[in-house]
Image (tube, rainbow, N blue to C red):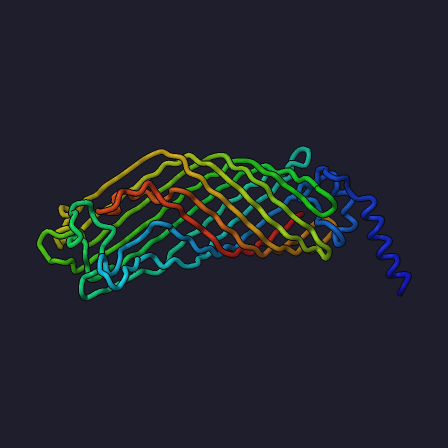
Amino acid sequence: MQSLFLYKHLKYFILNLCAIPIMTNAGEFHGHLEECCDVLLVKNPETQQNIVVDYLLFRAIEDTLKYGETNFRLIPPPSHDIEQDFSYNPGIRVTLNIPTYDYWLLSGSCTYFRADPSRVTSDDPTGNIFANLVAPTYFSPVNQQVSHLSGKWELKMQIFDVLFKKGLMIGKSFIIEPFFGVQGCTIKQKVDVHYTFFKPRTSLRPPQSVKGISRVSGVGPELGAEFRMVFPYRISLFARGGFSCLLGSFKGHTDYGDLLGCSSSSTQISLKDHKLRLFSSMLLQIALSKWWCTSRSSELELTLGWETQIWSRQMRMNWFSTLASPSEGSDLTLHGPFVRFSLSF
């Protein structure tokens, strides 16, 4: 037993001696690891094809979306914002990594996410709910007080990334993998709000329904880095940070209907907006992974982590307030856990 114990420690010591210099290409270190991937490091990804599937469970939040306020301008009690109850929804991301010249890795990924939280309702028999999302026609608060509101928000996102990566080793168990490339996206948000029982009740009253659609399509450069600290027993700590600046086409379409209490198209107002402008996205991931060498040429990796995305200036519905200045947009935030399955071959 003592000889076996000494042999294992001697083997570990020899592996450390023949390991890497302070910094080198991760691909150049691949040859040293094929016999000992269970001791120090996973086989270098730049030498293997790799397919990755992520299951996402994100909570999407649109910052400035507010349907109304209760007890508007009444003291006491204090007013309370009526906002969308954002919930967690599933999504999926598929990534394909292909090794290229001189240990560079070409990575392409596609993400699909859809948020469909439940409808929000609020009632106040005294009619002290202030309706935020009404047509910019009346400028007196009494024309925006209602007894009931019902609001619904939906989101659909498709994100595309094409990146080039190259790993660098620092020390014996730390990998830095900078990347650069192009990111594209399409983001669609829908809002459907209904207000009823306006105070006072007159024949000329604000609209009872507001339907808005905001569409964004953009593309731009992306850069960032991945960091991996590898521990024995094929366990590693993983982090990734990325930033992109995109030029996007923003299209907004808002319909204010039922202006006179009937559904005729002649009682509706339809406003449209189309602009080109810059916006940004930021991503941060942190995760813990475990991998198995299924054979000398393939590996299976399981990763559990948390991800946050911030998309700036997304909703473009400028007419969504009578007494407040029109907003230039608001940030869209996604955060939640993800589970990753990775197969290298």
